[in-house]
Figure (cartoon, rainbow, N blue to C red):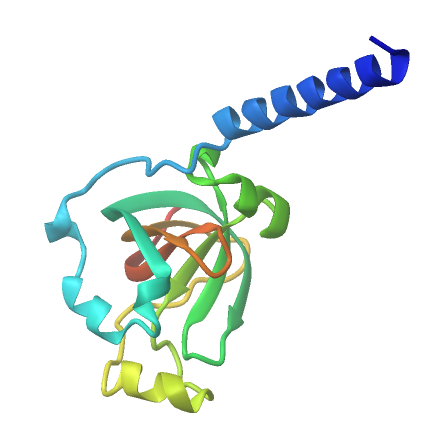
Length: 163
């Protein structure tokens, strides 16, 4: 076998090993199953474009520090959470979401996207938005967003500020 072929094979094996190690470190697994009674299932009636969300765990709780927040046009508050347990992240969270778990409080504000208005309807969530830097516990459905490929907690039932 020629030297370039040997180098190519070694490079492929090395890349495969790195990918396997990364998948083992970031498996995208819910830390705890709370059972459906810990979350508000009626929130699913107000999730915009819910078919894009693949449910991994119907109800879980994740703790971490709020790193970023922004209000999306669909009415959702997007929170970038640095999770205490990195096993909730998958590789897309690591590479495209800056090692953050995306947390979405639905219908936090009036949607600017006309197509999202009907999803929120008259829902007024009771979730209080945290501030950047706060440690929180988020309770909600743990899903993979098929449009983005990352894992998130969406919809959020409750946010608790931790001290």
